[in-house]
Image (cartoon, rainbow, N blue to C red; front, side, top):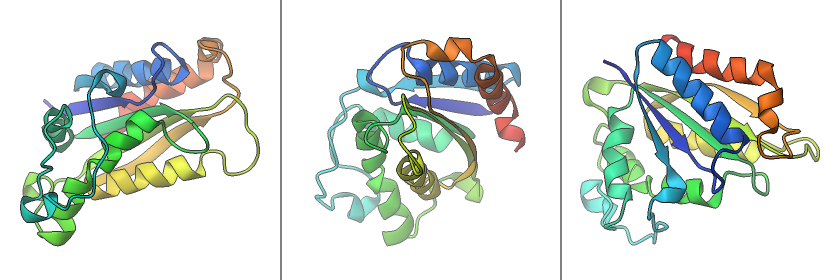
Length: 192
């Protein structure tokens, strides 16, 4: 059975990005994928300390909850990342997880080792929400970060939902078209 991993990057439970991720995960489950959701705020993940320890074996030397996340990232056939926008980027919690994937960068570019067996690529989808659209480029930084994250994981960026105007917690519940779009994205993720 193919696996879809949802990574929820918000410090706030049951907010707009959480609701959309849950819809996407329901869609993936409807397509018979085995789904798992990681709630980053519940994990103890230290920031990358740039020690270079991963340059020797492609494995991070920091012993925390991130150690259990690495295998899930590699085993996934699909990855859906959801976050609210903070200062035109992803949440701090999510950024810490992404930065700790420096171990995969070292594995891929320093040690020339594969990320997944048989050269398999996963598929990746990004969900980001914001309160107000304060001008052009609101999502640009976050999209670049996620594309870089997916690239190092040999994960093809296949699409996104980027939605501003979601000021209040739960505001997305009034946006049926976004809920349906998220469900459809999850359902179609492994087919894209």
